[in-house]
Image (cartoon, rainbow, N blue to C red; front, side, top):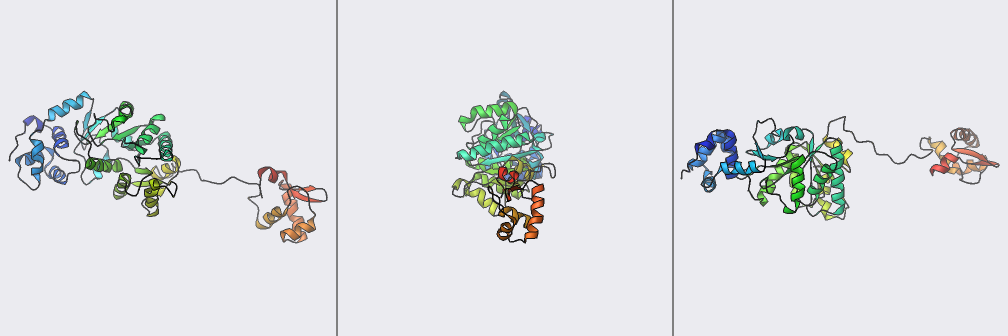
Length: 378
């Protein structure tokens, strides 16, 4: 069956790609093959001809296709269309086997520039208070380090990540599975509206399109490849967030995961990702920035326990310091017995400890110095 197409739809690649965002599902292999082989305009003609392997799947939607109406709806919501090759097109999407036909975008930021230093933060929808707190602080900390935060505007970790970025004035991008003018979930309408004001809301399906399970899965491939990496905060063993992480790994992006209580099934997916080597363990924004950011300039500070008086001592001096009492001084001969050192060694070492404030005379003997007592050292 041949489906007529108005010539105006074929006048520009941009219109043709907008048409493909209506007639083909995201990631459709037949549509991707046609576009890669013929280009978007000629590919529409092939699809309209009804001749060719698999092209009949497009016929029902071609019969009701109205690109002008989609463009009018998009214009009403100040949406613009991005196509591969546009300066604002996020280059990471070109790595996909089946990249989006186009992107519908709302919001003031330059998507490509924002993605140059960016990370996705994803996780469970039914997140715990712990997970939401970590996601919020992770996004805020990465935002303060000039990272753009990418997520899906879903319940739980996604929403917490967007809010953390917004709280610090960082750029955040929400990738939707439905049309850019359809807030989903509807209870996040205010959050998505705020992202539209200061960041970007994007979708690869035409305005008015409903979010479906398969579109959510395809949406994940965009979240996984738009930025430099993905941070997973809480994910079960069967989780869409793990799907995003696997896709990120497949396309050479860094994956990091936040550990949770070993008894929490909400963190079991994160633990498995770390255990399998798919993800690097991170506990805060500094560690995530080191994993995903610029080598050498995004280093996390080394973690060290508190410094105690006497930490720098050699083994004989440390043995003698341990033998010194806290309150009442004891004579040198008793210190030799308790430390296992000779009397001569004790006398020599006591002089050094005295100079450093680690030992002091008390009555007829010696005890620990004020520096050790005040710091709680050994």
